Image (cartoon, rainbow, N blue to C red; front, side, top):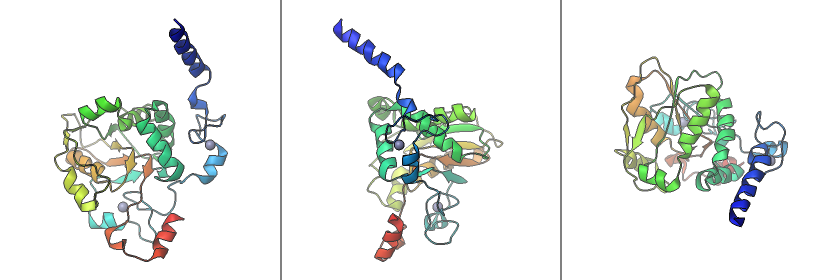
Length: 256
Ligand SMILES: [Zn+2]
Ligand SMILES: [Zn+2]
């Protein structure tokens, strides 16, 4: 009985003081949550991805080029990627919290921030990077699917499951660009979904790194649709292989 009461109390507290009126980064109360889910103080220091960046994969570029070295070397199967943040500091912590601690309530405010980057882009269908059934069961939810559903509500777009992940391969984390590409082949398949040449599709992922996963999935539906766009919460900077041995100045600039 007591346990039941304490559960009910917890639920009531959650209803009265929900997490979704607080800054998603530092937890202070804010008034304009619907407009912007973080406080003024956090806004000053958040790593926004708003500098000069690749017009295809959205990663920061240090020189004047419009397209990064990786995109110049290998064509992506999507038209353009959008990520509001860089994957570092408080953003990295928040993404990990969202993914690993089952903080589903973060999907809505994160979708809200991502949607603002998509203004002016015509999207007809939203889809997402799937997990294997086994992994989704274990984790209880797919963070990219949840984001896609929230973005779908904001943009008033249907969300379709266009891909299936049929096996978990080696973790991508410690693989270099070429190995990631090899690693991905045969991992995803396209599902039998009705798509047509007039549709613009948005593929939602959580964090974009080399973009090999999203580009591979985009390639599976590429001939069937009009444009493919990609979005994620954050962009992780990928050092092009050839710049790995450059001077310290390069990394210094990078970390600024
Ligand atoms: Zn804050
Ligand atoms: Zn690029």
